[in-house]
Length: 121
Image (cartoon, rainbow, N blue to C red; front, side):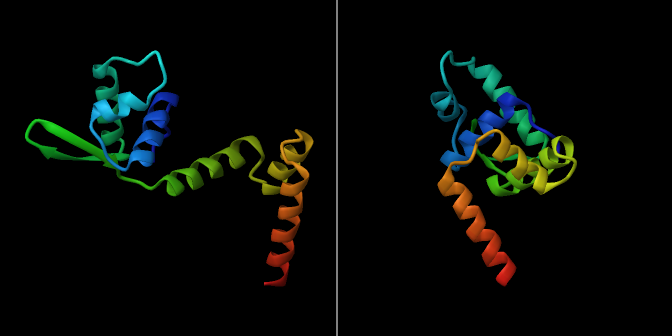
């Protein structure tokens, strides 16, 4: 699975949210300033070549839909982030989140409960 750039990932998020749609549906959900139709269309076709998107043709109209699920992409991307930025260590990820104060007390408590339930299993 090839990596996605920022604009490709933004389009994939939209397709995951809407399940399927034409280029105009994607453009309607992009933030302003809206890119040209041809730019979005080209990006979607590139996503199709990369295996992320498929389409159904109705005459000249193409309806696009995700070829992979969001959670599959998230798992792969998160694994790469852990590998590249945290030496492959989930502990380093949690340590980073704690040091950056990215977790509130309730989330920390939930993590404690998850860890305890995992230990008991």
